[in-house]
Length: 311
Image 1 (cartoon, rainbow, N blue to C red):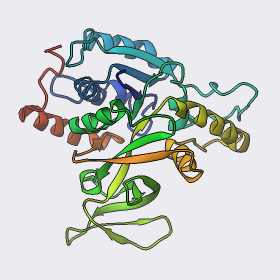
Image 2 (image 1 turned 90 degrees about the vertical axis):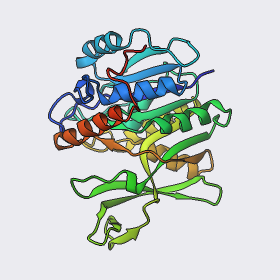
Image 3 (image 1 turned 60 degrees about the vertical axis):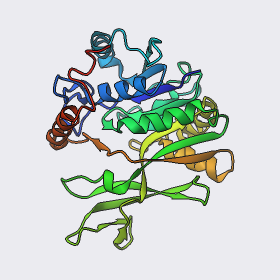
Image 4 (image 1 turned 90 degrees about the horizontal axis):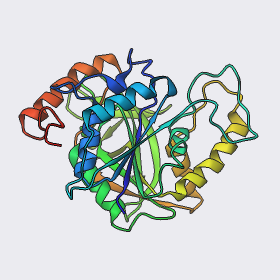
């Protein structure tokens, strides 16, 4: 059974200043999500599930089927699509939240919305991030290999040097692993950038600056999960709502779920290293760099232009 790709595309883009899910970035008007879909199809993912918001769902669906109505895997099988919405009021029955809240519940809640749409091992990615072709091959192969199952998950680890921003310091979750390459924890570090000597420096919250090797592995929210994750996560979301449902800004994140499962020995998470460069468009200022990178990748022949003219 082929793995599924779950794309988190419900973010409204308040920091970006527009609906970045459909913002043209590539040479022929492609979005960042288009490149992830292309790479996933090439890597053998048989289904794409999008998490979107109700207010732009119809426009988004129309855009998807207009661009790739006949997307196929290398074996010729047609890729399936599904669309699920994330809304504040989509919470377990019997629980409540502050009626003044407007902020979404976070990435782990977004994943939960796809519970009825996914019954295979699946990958999770951010819709506004570029992960690189090889990253999808690495994760797709792992998901399809039989290694993924109940309580057996994975995360694609990116080299810190491949995730820095030319615009200034960034925050990254630095991975801690055991001797077998399994995740033991993720430590959020801030202000990560190269100093005048060319070394990468940054610091955990409330601590002094440190120097980090270029190949330090970080999490960029690219996960490999099994369907049992949904039940584990749903129970934790119930607990989250009971404790924080009245708050206006607290969020329920995927790493929180994974960390809990690891430390209660209910799950393991293999770290899969990728050589790929990562970049994203969190802010409007990030857009010119992304446009240039996709132009370069197209000129090098990594991608055709237009992206889906051969499908």
